[in-house]
Image (tube, rainbow over all chains, first blue to last red; front, side):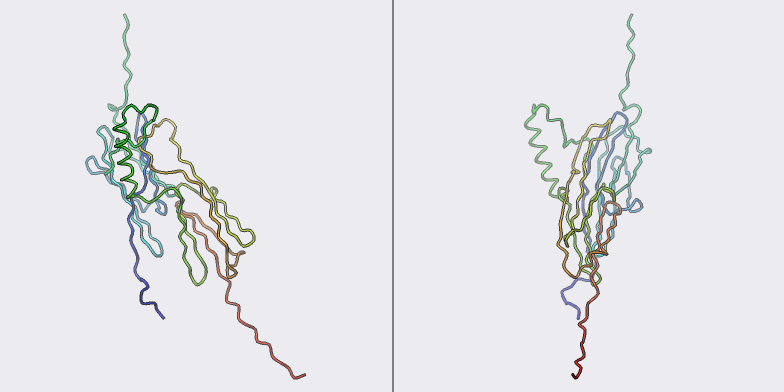
Length: 110
Length: 145
């Protein structure tokens, strides 16, 4: 006998995944926790200066969607963005433009 | 929208700017409300006819980081992860938490402890505890003495 109050449909929940942002001289590194999402379930999009990360995780009783948006600082090489997913953690590297990296200038001493 | 350069993590070497520190904490708490707690991994349980299934989100962990033990009818799961600033980088924002977790479950008689299985994929641990097939009552014929 079916319980009248039992839900039959999938529940969808949305989360903003926690993120760490690190900076080195040559790039930014963004690390997000997205457990249950395989590499193919992740989308990384860049539109002007906004980086959008989204992922989807299908479970038996529940579908979870993750997304987070970032405003990128000027000086990032958008074409060279790289993303890698492993063990439910997504790593995104954003190289900085050559000109945005610190440059050492030789000082001539006479 | 998260500003990539908006820091929530500074070297608190000098609290020169108290005003900004409080503003940062304020924003951090408001942001935390929108996010799932990353401190203690939660265990989701499902009860199927064939067995129980435990699901735990442990991003960053792989099979070798988890310890699963069964002793005297008690199942214990434990593991930990640290988050560290990668070499050569400084932190601008840190929301991901390291965690240590240990959970114990008493398995009822219906669970076949010998057949417990666990798998790990994309940072999600699934433990399956099969139930023994229903033991039917045995009819005993009464013979005439």
